[in-house]
Amino acid sequence: MLLFEQITRIQVLHSLIIQEKTGTLNELAASFHLSKRQLYNILDELKDLGADIKYCRIRKTFYYNNNFQINIYYEILF
Image (cartoon, rainbow, N blue to C red):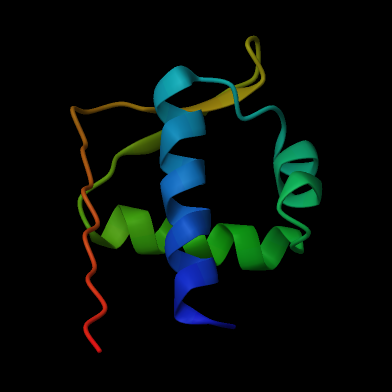
């Protein structure tokens, strides 16, 4: 996978988690065109960075159980 695709996925996923609008695991994986395992791998990467990610069965969304923020900056110089 291209680096920029991975960065974009993480940024979009982070935004959805903050807004608590991820939907179920199946819905989220389908929206990213990923398998559930691939999505769990990305969630695990965020957890490795300090995110306490939980899932609410009532609201059907993932959410941060801590004040997790991630800022990704990149610059391409030619």
